[in-house]
Image (cartoon, rainbow, N blue to C red; front, side, top):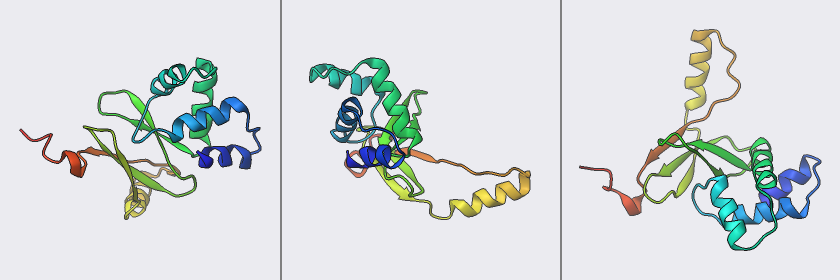
Length: 142
């Protein structure tokens, strides 16, 4: 995952072997994943990455914008790889976990209106949309 490694390097952090290993684990994923998923995969690959190291690096990648945290409908949280510095939102399939980035599409105007009406200075927002991807369309219907 060059994006995470580049973000680490650009921010002035050292690109250590454990950071690169965590970045490689992330690059091998499709859709959203949890830190526990990464830890399980690291153990299966017999990588020598401790739990604390893995979790700490995931949080660093979030801080640097190479990963984004998703709050799932189940109450759990997961992560998805993304491009730093491009404001976007995610659509996540509830069946397979595949995710797609979508442009802001006018949400900034809504946020500005909310800020103006509430008196708050809003400097961060995030939107997560959940449903079913084209491969699983109709799964949620009863």
